[in-house]
Amino acid sequence: MAEEIKELIEKIRSEGVKAGEDKARTIELDAIKRARQITADAEAEAERILNEARESTSRMEESSRSSLKQAARDIIIGLKKEMLAVLNKITLSHVRKALTAEETGKLIAHLLKECKAKDRGDIIISFKKEDADKLTSVFVSELSDELKKGLVLKPSEDIRGGFTISYDHGKSYYDFTDRALAEYIGSYIRPKFSEILKDI
Image (tube, one colour):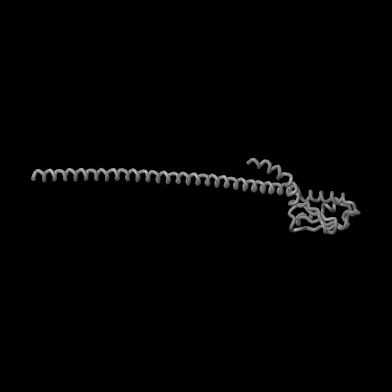
């Protein structure tokens, strides 16, 4: 009987150890499986985050490139406008230098001589106020008494160079002011200048 109990105890111990070892092996396999799944999930999440970061960086780089291109275009457009403005100022400056009181007087005298008496009403000439004395002396010396008839000289605060002339009592006039002449000259220069700037 003692031998049977001993065998029974040995059998229970052996089965318990085997059951414990099986349970431990199952736990270990589950732990390994779970660890592998956690590692795989972590790697997948890391890859997802990395891909998002790459896409975000790519979008930011593209956005930066696009912003830089737009800024460069804006700078070039602004520069071209500034260069055209400088060209207009230079043209106006040269026209003003050319339209001295003496030259203006000669131009007016020539226009008056070319005008036929039958086409004339009162002629009104407006010019820069500061040129009044010089222009008057040019008219006195260069124009005949016949041409001086019906001639009205009007100094103007608004004219900085050149003159306007009206052959019909001021109803209409021809504009030979510095600004009008500079605009006229500029209308020929600007397209050529713009063509040069086109490839910039």
